Length: 109
Length: 190
Image (tube, rainbow over all chains, first blue to last red):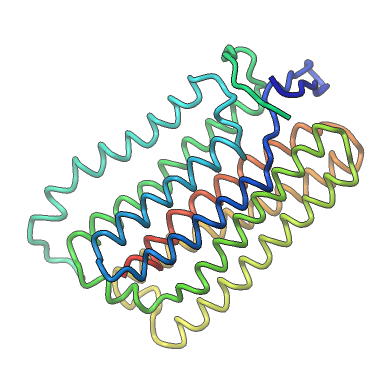
């Protein structure tokens, strides 16, 4: 376990149980992924490019959540709260998609 | 310094941090609802790819770099606050606020260019989504900057409640993550 410190607030003492990874190294990897995502945009294969770009965006987001936001040090319940929020979006998308994507609509394009 | 994960009970999570994660989960649904609606319409109307080709990928990439860097500086501010290093905490918070200012300036230049070419919020549904999503995100950037400034003025300057730096940082990282997804959606996927 990394360093453990306490914060004294008005009501109680809070324990800081998560560590501080090498933030600069993580930032370097994130910038590298950004450059890579711009490069795959020039592949010329649209489906492959878009899939890779969104895959790399997901990797960036997970790195930020896990390391900068320290979610990997938090109780699993907090991770499940986030997963539930994202799952709710999936339910919304797949529940509405058949009507929006495949049914002709008289709305502005 | 090596760091390992360990099992932490939910009751050990400080109230402020737990509340901030709850706020972030609700924000995920707010932005996610917009993003999912955009994706649905993008699937329905492939010609939106043509509209997206009028957004500036270099500007979007620059803003992604700015927000990733500001996420680094706010993480360093949190680390400095943990070490009770007030001067370093303030320095990194100011760098983060500066990142927010640069982001907004770049976005303003983009908006000006797009509007001058006739791509206004009423041009078509793509541009309505574009301005709604990036505008809502910009409001969150401003809110994050204000939160960091207030934490600095009210707490950090007086050397108290330094854990609030982490709360402001969590919010800022979320704003960064939203942009990580808006960038490919609106700028890269043509």
